[in-house]
Image 1 (cartoon, helix red, strand yellow):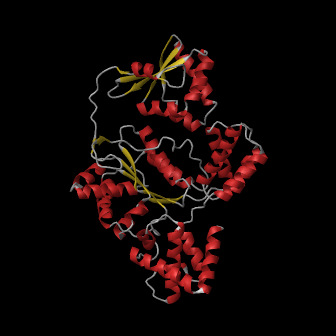
Image 2 (tube, helix red, strand yellow):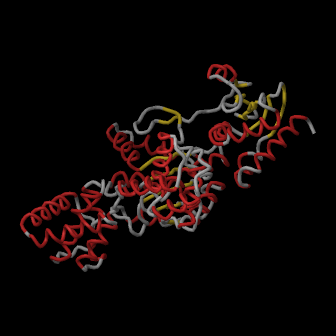
Image 3 (cartoon, helix red, strand yellow):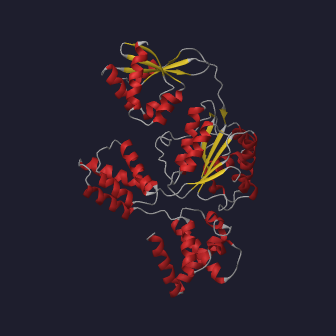
Length: 474
């Protein structure tokens, strides 16, 4: 065995002892050592994406391994396969002292390439010429997506898609959940993992609001055909928060044609929403039926065991490894609603410790967590508002979505719209779509009616205050 191979094998053994088997197999087994000179180990990685990922996520671990085997002077240099076995040489940013200028001078392509660039007429969120970029967030990956009973089905399906996009039974994959439960994280993770397994595929993440803006701009410029053609060039489309296309008939029609193209060509579509296809409102039936063709998977609130693992992972990734176990236990029991609030609490604890230059104790952590919980404005969904209002007035929830003009049902519908306007960021049209498919004018009339009754009917005012108290204390 060559010396450079022996050195890399020793490094791999150190790395393997510090990460789980799956991540080791994904990120480090494909790497080959190809040279060693003046304590600079040269390794070859499959793609530029590998280089960026390792530099962004594992450089500290790699640095530790290199220094343990080669000493403090040890460095690593990457050879990256670009096109047709041609290579690009890059230094590491995390090992040794390499200035920005040095890195710029050391980057070179060994041979000229003729790689074709895909023209992209739409730069998010506008409509300008640019090469297609995935828009994926590299921090939202499978490495830091904690699996539990709450999301195991969705995660397993996502990983299967990444290995064989468009060829599984999970096309489309429709992910749905409440706020802060990880559907956007999982969608990004699937896209990133797909790029690892299939670096040549073109993957794009876009939120529904941006998709809508792009469509409007294309319609104004009479460029709908170009708009559709651009999306049809993709191999995987991830569209987030599809519910924001509710009641947008023309945009839905265009998306319908894009969806059909993807399905016919065996390309992968991933969709996220706040409701299941059976519950989502404001969409054409033919589009809803297509949402149900693949797998619909919900992400639920994490159980206590999963919350503990999420907290430990967040702390570890932020460089905190000495926090008392009692703090983790307390945090996992105190915040149970969603992952986003857990992250906020951890940031508060870290800020307190850093700014005050104090160790995190059980007492100080409890003070910070309790203050955070009191000050956190809980996001209240329109679904929850409807359930609370219906329970209060003893009306069946399904009656809310009918066209009934009975006085008690109309009043419940109006009160639901009133509190939806107060507690959510939804537009009047979106509120109407989720309250029996009403238009924005109906919602506006409902809110005015409730305000007038509140000012003139004392009993009704008391009822509103009691409902408001229930929602605030949720």
